[in-house]
Image (tube, rainbow over all chains, first blue to last red; front, top):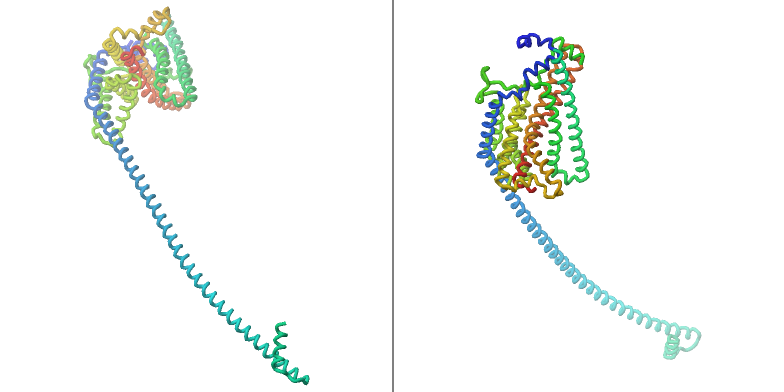
Length: 185
Length: 79
Length: 259
């Protein structure tokens, strides 16, 4: 049967192939290899178990814990730095605010100074203007008085001449009185 | 010889019938996965914690299909 | 089907989807004794070496900013640790190295098994049964040691109606003893099925050398191998995850039988 199997494999039909395989059986159910497999499985498992539990797993666990610690530390440091940054920002803002207040003060001061100068200048100018106005008023008054006198003189002269021209005899005092009355009237 | 042929025929028919079990297991596995997906879409936040349960369910459903496959293999190669 | 039969007739296609699971001695051709170094030994040793390289050697630097290998190990550590703590509770963390051993062994054996031409120890029922039943016995003993007779409360639903309780207890006991069976067969079955399917598609790939229909069959089977391979990478991880999380669930039942 074995020799025919090897020689007639080429012409083996499906059924025969199955039959042949049945002769071989499933390697999984070949009980003669079981002790061998079980023995080597146990050896392998023991080796893996001891390597893992004695060496690898504690080491990996320690590394992971270490990393976790490092991360926690870093996070704490970052938190601290963040607080510092917040404080720095607050100081900056405070400085900004105080500078602003200072600037406001300086501006107000300058404004007040300018106002004072301005007020003084305005007062001075007002005084000057008032003085000038008074002066001009006085001169106007003088001019007006001068003019009135001149008008009286001219009127008196004119009236005396008119009276003389009309053939009268001009009494200077009478003419003057008449002129004054007329001017007043 | 006829008896041997009949036995071989019966073996193969039996193996084919046993293979139907694999299809049935496929239905079961699909059921598990589909229902899990339906539930997960309804409540996605709870889905992550239930993947282990999903795989256990899939494993149980699939194991029975594997049994039928095993029966087919035994019929083909071992009986 | 006709093409397949024809191909067989022409003697090209050879379907041996289970040959990849054969246990063979590494040296020579002798009988397989319990101590013989076999391909099981080789691939389990490779899995152990990968684990040692990533976890023991890779973590040697203890760098605060991890290298790639170190962060791989740390990710796996965090992943499994969280799983144990979430499922089994705080006192389950004591068994973290055990769970980690299970997870890493299964994961690396699965992943190494995906290399072409490799052997997958986790596809063998002998291996997964030792893992499953070993953990089952460990958990059961642990439950009795920790809780004494109180551990039997796991089967006695005190919030069910009194008449139903014995029936439920019987069902619970049965399901408790089925646990290791399904626990181990699930892993082996999944890995075996995936590898066998890949092998079947691979057997279809040389069709183009045999018949004209191979023009269609060969590209399709190569595409299928690619797709199944991607799926198998996912399955390799998910099965390791599922095995581990079920181990955590069983551990939780042992530590806290009253929920």
